[in-house]
Length: 336
Image 1 (cartoon, one colour):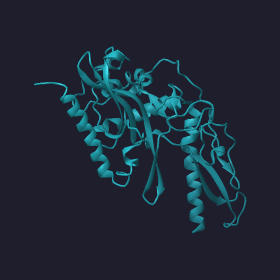
Image 2: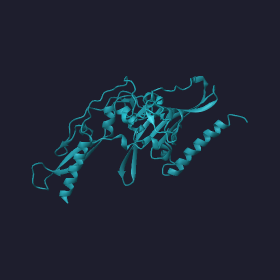
Image 3: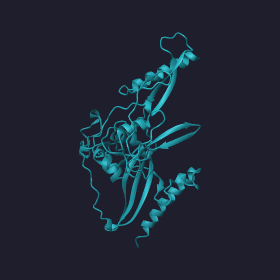
Image 4: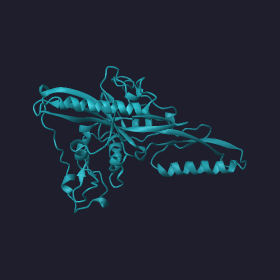
């Protein structure tokens, strides 16, 4: 039995090394580390009111995670995010030329009503299947924008604390420890602990959270949404049916739009008219989502409130109630 465990441990280490060949940090020995990592970026603690001047929290064992320097590339021009072999020149390729359709000019004086809403987009839902389209997965786009330093990433939805790509990779990585036979020893019971990092990848992202403002434009007489930011949701299985969700970073939608406008999205109704991701998300809003939070005095998510904390169905009904309230409010503005 011990020999089987040793073989499995060696296979796990080999798999991790093969999956991340460019990342150092595979240490050996009793709780050995692969090197020391630089401290997390400076700034204040986490929370929606975080400001500058402290340090970002690091997970337990982060000293064993070595992240190569990535740097920031905020001024680099936006590039098309697709593989060249997948580009079909017969389709409506002008949609991928990076033309960002600007929103109609809106004066602050013309905003007579504003409501902030947080939504969750589950890529496993049927309406959102194009989010995991193998030729152009948008979850990879949002992950690469942050982890390659192409746009600024923020700790919270307050957008007041910028974090580096290295911090994102370090905060989302885990340290795994396995036991294997000591090198050069013939005793199968002579085991030594070996630690190695397991890095989070974009394939593990199944949900996104967006923050948007619903504003009533008095000049044009319409109630319309404006997406402010988006964040991937990382689900951590703690065992026993307990799944903890965290958001490693937030991105401003306006920073992402130039890249989204050059990235193709699958059109399930017409192959001759492919849309880009900016049109899909900000213009047509073809995704499905559910509300998890609104701007309230207690600043709590619906599922964290006492009345809905242990009742997922009640939380969904509360979200639908809010949507209906918004619909009735807009409907009552007009006379027929």
